[in-house]
Length: 424
Image (tube, rainbow, N blue to C red; front, side, top):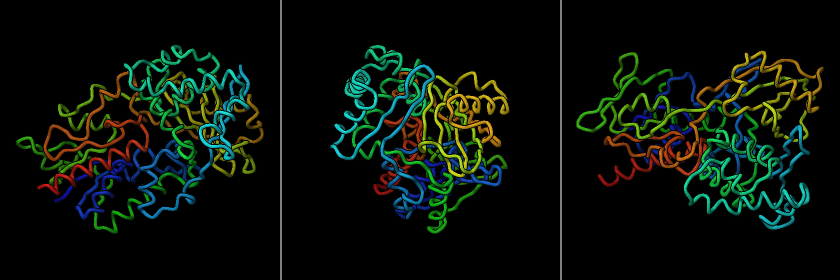
């Protein structure tokens, strides 16, 4: 039996690998000229960069396990660092979260937070984390309402929770789901290694996309790039084929739709189970500075500014991430580069003579909106049509729009197909 997988992002790749492991036949089609979806390689200034800077955390167990199964060496692909972040704000002192290996977790995090930021900040942070479990089981409200309910200070809301909410959910505090954010907090701080940062040392396209592509080819799977699916063929509530935009018919026993929410909604029409497939953008501004320039740490946080997170990619290349909607979207690329550079100059992160050139990547539909009630609005893996399965990060799981969520959903679709094939 053949499974057609529509979409060569991380979810589609995860589904393809897991099906091939069980001896299933797969055909993966991708509309772009390369695999990777919204986490793929881009060439700029004679160097390979990411289509938007990403950060992994140790809690991404399924993604790391998939890479391991494909023969990847984590230490070659990622720099794993213990929790240690500094977030700057123009109106407050730097806020720091760090761990120490000399004490058991989470006592080590609690004591270090107290030492670095004072007792009042320590109490507020750990009160929110402690109460996250009860919020996760309560009626959903906005993250902003939850933070106010928990008596979080203006400083912590602006300097810690807002940048974390935007980084993990790409949704502003006023509309983001408190239940989903609570789960993110619980997972991130559940154990020491879950809170680790895994910063890519190679372009993301050289991680899962490259390893999965090689495995698919080795196992006899078929990959068709620059192939766009226009519609599905459904007879008697059973999917039988897909039609490409150039008139080709691709027959299959099962089809997994592993595209972004917007494309999935267009393909599935009345079979789409979500009420809302709207999305928020993420902008990454790459700044090439003098090659000997380095940040104080591989990642720095900024709050109260347009710039939110800055990553040191080595050789003077900085990646500045701006998540969610905002006035920055109205700026031209040149204006945005100038604006971001000025913010880094104001905080003494770079000096005027060090900046050489900049490049802007705008992912307009970067992630689905993780709004209040989103947990009950997301589609499930099984569609109403026999043989038709849904993947991609928007499909219902406990994560917001992350690469981990995409991998989980791709593997789940594969598991359901194998289960049905075993029964039949």
